Image 1: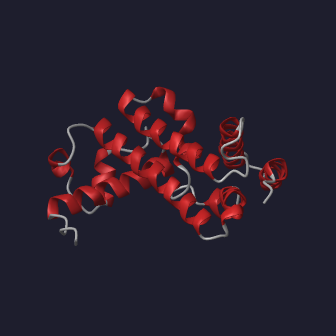
Image 2 (image 1 turned 60 degrees about the vertical axis):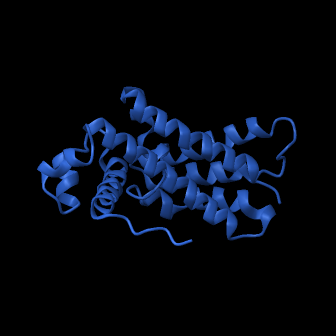
Image 3 (image 1 turned 180 degrees about the vertical axis):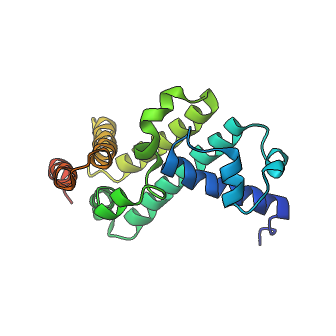
Length: 192
């Protein structure tokens, strides 16, 4: 059954959320203004409230979209390799130089994690949901899936991946950034 085409308003709403999802990763929550989002989406500032009741509502949808994009990208990576290679492929892609340098399209958690405590409950709830999905995805691709300790190992893997990217992006020393990524890859080194 074919899904009906989105209405013009739905398509516009999606365009705004897409722009906002990139923007929050690029400039942070506080650096994401309604006027800038609407301008980048090719719309007037006045049309914003036809789509969202508040800036916080837009930020929550943007956080959800950015997190969903991260999880979907990781799922595609894992799905593109033999089943026992999924975790290794996800880790390598996440810790790659390409992901490190693509702030606007990269992992929302690594880009925004330090800002989360200061966000509204709605924004935090959206981000938390996607973080849980990421942990679950890593756990499902673990060679220890279904065994005791697999969930804890997935937590450690995600924390290591996110923390590594966050720190590698934070430093102004390219060698240190590379050393951080290499150390994390060596530490995680999934078998399979």
